[in-house]
Image 1 (spheres, rainbow, N blue to C red):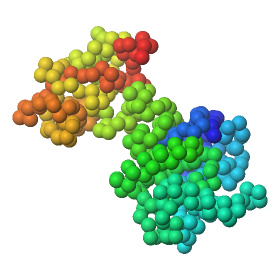
Image 2 (tube, rainbow, N blue to C red):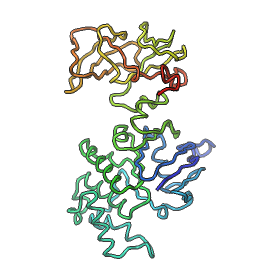
Image 3 (cartoon, one colour):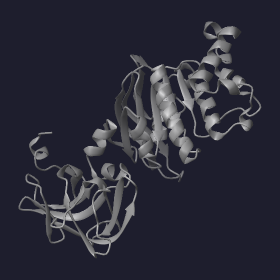
Image 4 (cartoon, rainbow, N blue to C red):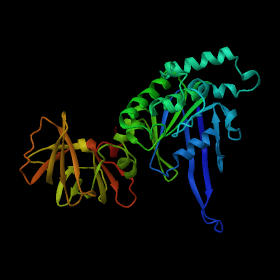
Length: 372
């Protein structure tokens, strides 16, 4: 089911009831979610991603704008008539009911011709339980299960009535690191098996990038960028997006462009022909550094962390925004840990320039000429 968000805006009253101030949680959101895809809504706390999810579900009404499921305008429909399945961060399972009864609950609430027979309910419950691999736990109660198992029950309950759209609101936040990894892989598998259009809300960029067909990066209610995860990582439109995506995060330096070259401090570190001569933020991805005894960028060496296949070179530079720089290089490279400094060349495709004032992306080289 295709989902279209058209000029979607949600405003809430300010805390001071005497004031006319409002808080805009979602601001003029336009997006078409393709049929059968998994979309990650991504951003820091308070960016509006959960509000956008609740607007799609019908739990809250928009201040303005329209929501379409396929060609049907569902903006004014209540949640129960939209055909959505919801999975919450808190699981929201009924503790006094068994797993079987929890999964069956939405089917029992269907009315009239939509309500299946008891035998059909049992069949669909077993089918949903098998989908999330808990068919052997149907007679247990939630309190007898691990967090990961409870999350699977919540997913089974959401998909048992085969919703048009599946909505997941930070469903992995309560799980430990190992379970988060396993469960996000399961969510991707389930979505592919069912083909249900799915919206996944998270603040964890690694989570969103690993399972989403497309990601939507939000900040303060405004969509910053939409695209395939790798494309957004490789080609951020502004400084916020570049800093939000990536682990370790991008290294940001104060720089300036002069004579077609990027200067960090007094060192010309990269040819950036086509870029305007302005003060910039220079973002360098951790994998963008090349150890080079004659390299143009000199940093103060702080240490080397061996990670097996790779090495993390921890260093510093007076023009870096953060206290430490992390350069990820191959373990085949030898770094003299006794040296006070380390020099690097830079990979042009891993260096992004941003206007110091507006933080908008500045393109250079082939990109400045419109060539990808």
